[in-house]
Image (cartoon, rainbow over all chains, first blue to last red; front, side):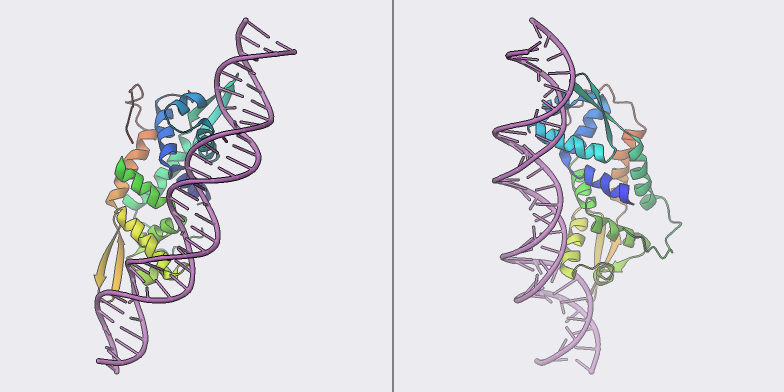
Length: 100
Length: 100
DNA sequence: AAGATAATTAGAAAATTATCTAAATATCTA
DNA sequence: TAGATATTTAGATAATTTTCTAATTATCTT
């Protein structure tokens, strides 16, 4: 339940979701990503860092460039969380004292 | 893309996600929900309002009580968003100039 | 009608987050 | 090596969000 917190925190910002949309299309350098936004590079760098901490993107340095790419595995967990509201009724009678 | 913004904004808070977990088990009054948290009732009321604005929960007044229940339809859209990162490669070559 | 209970609204304070500028680090090129 | 480019870090400010107390609305009970 802890990783999911980080995941949602990462997804809560529109800029970060747009970054994900961009990386869905192709891998990009930090600069390329920044070109798609009006805000300054350090701000984008900050958002990239949050996505990275959430394991949603990976970075690989190549020379002076840093290439970012999507890490789809975390989306699986998110998928699980959501599908359990739409499909799964098996634990509807549980005590459900899930700790944060 | 607008509704999704509201959805993620609603999900970004751990308290609200816990409320959803609770309502997944059974419908509850505002007071019952509040009992599961340490914060005061007005704060819970505030969170319920945000979830309601995001169409993730519904409320129905019965006498002096207000019963809250989950509205699962919005989760479908969320599901769609996520599955398109894990399954769908069909638009990888798109221009992708999606407006916010 | 009067008091009790359930829930919300209003407004302020506290906490968190986003964004900026300036400076630092690393790499490339001439 | 010196200067240019790519990116990040540091620290401050602005914006947003959360939470509280006090007051309000609505309903129930006696």
